[in-house]
Picture 1: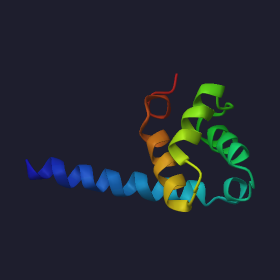
Picture 2: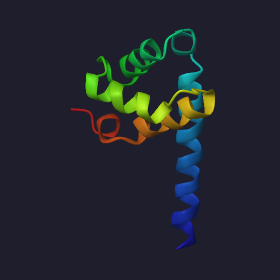
Picture 3: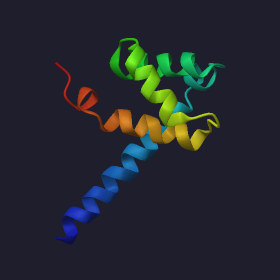
Picture 4: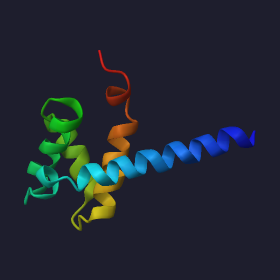
Length: 88
């Protein structure tokens, strides 16, 4: 019921804030090129480089007009993904 909705909204707010802080970290925001910024995000989150397929998907998502809002949404998607949630 309503308890689940409240918890979902709190989790969304938490993940959104975590994503916003992640993309505003100096080592991420300091990267001039989109590809470099993506690699830094993957290094921080997954301790590995992004694959060429992940880079393509990210650039499709971010588009030409990359802004903080898009970066935050992208980081939020990474944080919600299985690889981040279920580490071996």
